[in-house]
Image 1 (tube, helix red, strand yellow):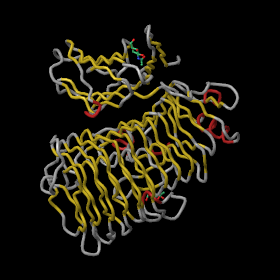
Image 2: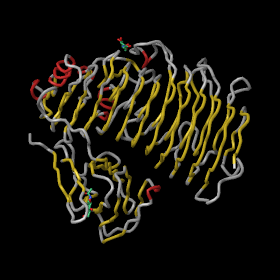
Image 3: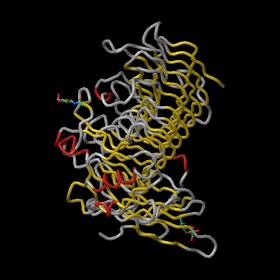
Image 4: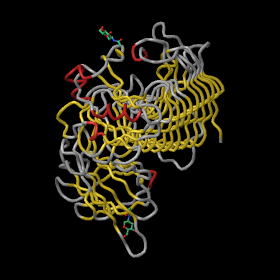
Length: 514
Ligand SMILES: *[C@@H]1O[C@H](CO)[C@@H](O)[C@H](O)[C@H]1NC(C)=O
Ligand SMILES: *[C@@H]1O[C@H](CO)[C@@H](O)[C@H](O)[C@H]1NC(C)=O
């Protein structure tokens, strides 16, 4: 296996930056829809279910040309580039759509109405470790198979060996590694080099069953931290491939991809997660967690519950620069009861959730882009969703207080652009849904204090928005709406009717601020 990393220096007389492309792992087919050159360097696009994608890193601060070529049919006729907020102004050049950007972005583009391509451009890596040397545990030295043929024990052997030297790094070079459960040890890092793929087999007997998801399937925490750990980092530009299509559809088995659990000062920075069969990246009962440069590319054709990031019972969690594509919710927070379904393996009694921020995210879903719920069995407070975009969703932003009787308080949705709303999540289809339910005996609880500011609602959905409590004992109170721009109006909406908020029972002190 060769080193599958192409580094290309692109120089000019005045300024020079760097573009790093990653060779398409041999297990993935090539896109038949698009080609892409970044500053004249060819990128390798992966054909995927529902959309194609490509990953690259680039220096920021210089104008960098993206030349995207549509392969089938004629010349570029129509196109769409999301997020619109970057105001990218391309030009058509025959079969090419050409544009320049100064900073790295996650973009979702279609040309002539064909399949989307997701361009995942990250800033250059800043902390690339050497592949060998003091404190580096290269998995190839622990018998890891990088050909994708046999189920690996080498990676865990390297992780265990690294665990005996705090501060060390487990290095996974380019190649394909089939892996069972992996446990990252306290005070160590796991580095996935560009071109590496850690692959779930999708076979239940290869994994520890940690829980049975009520109403779904048995599942595992695939890659997790050890309990009572600290200072763990998972980073790099490799791929974590859940093979959800095989696991879930063919073998009745689900997996969370990356599970920081009972850990402090955890960092996830850079790897691409694809085809998760269940909630993909799930901080659980952890504190001081940073999730950066996150790319979760799930499929729309293997069923619901393939959420992007679910923060559960954790405090001080910041997600920054992320794209999540999932049939179910992209970014959400939840709290749960003890020892039921997915919480059976939780190390602690149920814990509240506090101080969770999602910043600079892109959501593409058939459910909610940004959501609190449905589980609210312990209090959830100080949750902020900001500077983010919904490319497509059934609901843009919301709180679905469905299970549990605890309180949701002090929530902010700030500077969010909602591009397309369609379909149904349950019976909801709108830009905003804040509501409380009580199915069976699961309890109901209040929502207090929600600020909704600077929202561009380019598409509002078909069912009307909700700010609706359950009954007089379980209400939604103290909500402010400010600068809500409906359907590309240049002045903010002045009434609930203009905002299409049509369900407002059991709510109090809901104000439009001008
Ligand atoms: C792309 O090319 C331009 C013009 O030569 C240069 O200024 C810029 O630094 C390059 N960008 C990158 C990321 O290499
Ligand atoms: C999951 O369900 C199976 C079958 O009922 C059972 O044998 C197993 O112990 C359960 N596992 C967990 C972790 O709850």
